[in-house]
Image (cartoon, rainbow, N blue to C red; front, side):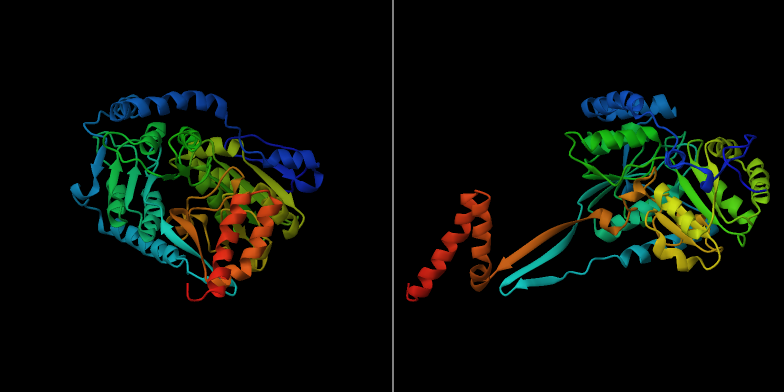
Length: 452
């Protein structure tokens, strides 16, 4: 089946279809727009929660946890050292241990190397790295439990040396924490567990409560209410920063005639099953891709998924586009700026240099997006909603801050000072100028009277 023009079908587990060659610039731009999130109305819901947690602390967190999660908490915070080690099935434990080792190795390799630069004789500059002292990690737990996210956030925090690491995640119905999340948290150096989800958890970490430490930066994916809370609080008196603005999960798959329809369908559905607000995009390269078989495979696999209802809704605002060649396919991908980009094409590596905007890239037919979600070593907390144009995914750098240091010798100030004084005079900042010229005068005086 070849694609032609506008959308052409709407049955369950199907995607709209377009041919890039037939679309105007406006129509292409419309494809780049993600499913709309009405943040103005969401902010109206979230702001009162944020304010209530600020004023009532733990009591507010307990109330919202009872209201939204139907769990009554005796206490909202646990010190992780006081919790017993969870017992996992050996195969499950081994899987998380392998993931931990790979994530640790990849992020440890990102440790910065300190360099000293002598820009001119006697003028030495460097940049030193320091960890962010206290961080808050949000691990979702609504429609799916995500211990993998606990690893993705806590391992780089552990390597960076963050002193206070608060992990927030919704409690189970008995008030406890998912044992797999707890296992990953203990292994990765988390110090506190906040038994709460949603906007109330973000607010508790941002403001601090009677029991929850205030953090300086908050990380992690979440639903639209979590994202709204992060956005509100980074622009508030809480004085916190966030990793990135994030929206629903997404993947863009570029496939040529050599790609297996079974694999392509599986990759698309692996993101569609995250939730009804996810979006997946298939870009087929050339006229000879068997799109009909891919569509049939999507239908077949979707109908057999336990989370097929979520995937079906996501596919309703997802689409397929046909590109003439790889250059056109990658041009569209770069405009879309996907969270995940899969290049399921022959000789995928040769196209890597043309990828400009993507959170994480999966090269070749043997690299499903799932490996990055869990255990290849790269981080799965990535920019969505087109933010890959200007944001990177979480990395070791996300848990670090950098301080510049400069040191001048007497000769260095003699070499550089006159230029600084001139620039300060141009800007009309006399005190800046004097901070240099008074020192230069002292140098001249000491050289004229070496015995003084």
